Image (tube, rainbow, N blue to C red; front, side, top):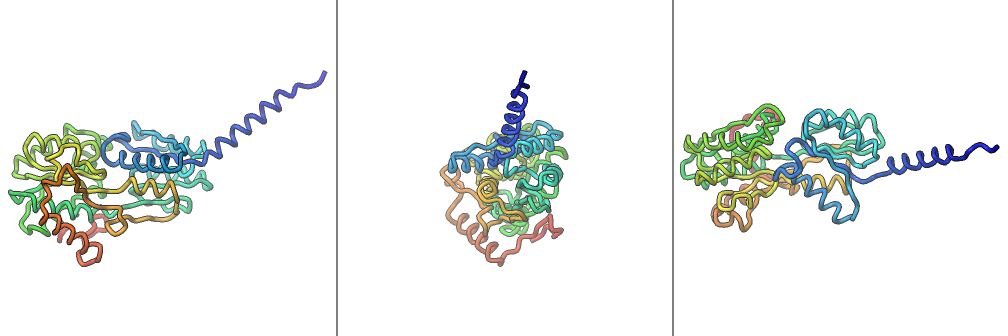
Length: 327
């Protein structure tokens, strides 16, 4: 009796399956807390992946973090499937990206908003202070009280960088401007707490602020609603959020996470990539939803400031570089 060939056939099939999995070779993206449809940071990353897949016709893998313990597991699962590159959205994923990237040195990884110094990792960071300066200047020009506000998400140096740039821009226009600042919390939950965001905005309005900038992910939705309800102005962040409350949104500080994710997916470059106004990674938004709120004089002044920042004439202090938050 001849021995069965089935075990060999099964082994070959298993090997073929494993090879196919390891050769997936399309990108994977792991969104951070708040979900990919947070209308802000994560959604910008999602839009970048959508642009890539529409241009290439190829698929990509994705995972939305529900709790902080899932990060490393999700990244490792993508690596085991052979996804390439694997993109972690948000500074909180840095340690997990670093750990898994060391385990899979032949795969490419990327991290947005933090630096991981490994030969197979691209780190994309932004000059948030530059865009925040511009919207701070706009806030001061639009303010009738000389008082403006800032609501941050999680209290971390990155968000302090937004606040610092915003204050510099406001005081560039009005040296006597008062800038109120509040952070939503100290954990990842601070990115998705619209109720608390609304409360903080209302407290700032009660003190006289009439324009509030939110750099808080999904929490910002509550800030914008509070501004609308109070007849005040708000400023969006990351994605163009002008459409969320037309007539209330003075502008949005654009942080082109979509561009970063698209570029990484298309042409991964190990090392650190820095995106600011000059590189087109940071900007402010004017469209049909806020055109009536942005006067020609306001736009002229903010565009002049933008040009001066790009040329180096205006130097915006970077909170994360240890610079004093003063203009």
